[in-house]
Length: 378
Image (cartoon, rainbow, N blue to C red; front, side):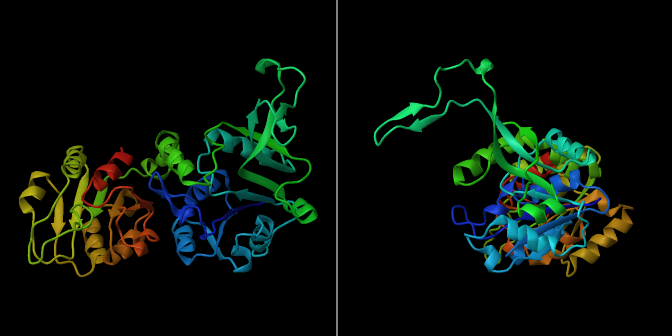
């Protein structure tokens, strides 16, 4: 029995431009669903992102998911989700007993506890399931044009009420045979997984986006560790201009503007016995006094092929690729961003860089960007 995880990530959001790639903890919004799908998946399972955007699909592939370009018909505001699911299903050879999962990208807050409950449903060969929110709300209904009345005879105490369960739109699953029978993401006989209020937030507007960004700083630490800390990172390769230095420079000047937050973070990183390298295409050597003060492991200037120079440093210092990360912000950094399993780009990087880097940090280059990255790796 296999599992197919479907993540629909359309690019045409009108309320929030490019909503599905807005950074949450430095990770594009829809990518959180890839991370959660990987946690629930087993060997031989499939994870597929359906999108009308080549940029989104490139990001999906960079995070290890399959990608499927969606037709214009399935990308409109009025398109239903089930036809999108069917479009993905038709790309795979599946058995009628295989499970079809739908993970909505607008719900990036999912706990491991909730996902493990879903895993148990799969292990117990359940027919269908979905996530819900538990509520004890008092319902009022419209009486006439000017007034409303309660939909209950007496106001009960909360502890005396039976809870109601409302779909929160986060995760659904059903077996393929029931999807084909009912043409629906769930069957008529479904199990529920009750999520808390945080997990039940769907991002539909800018206020909800900002709320999730704030909540996720603490909530998603469990997942950040999955993506970064379990890799045992001990080495950073970084561009300079637009990454450590602000993306501003006077004509014919060799001066740079740096953040003291970043320089302190780098010094602390190196002081803990880790390595830090600068690799720059800039031919004029600069900032040597500062780099020496920070005890930067080594700096390479005038690089015409950053990836080749980095591979030389990996060999020289006997480093493994999965022990290292790369920080970059422009086209000359793309090969390096793709080469490493974990890579970061600042907020003001070029759009092409975002689809090549794993993380998009909310700080600009030279303005606390490196400090935020190194904090995530602690």
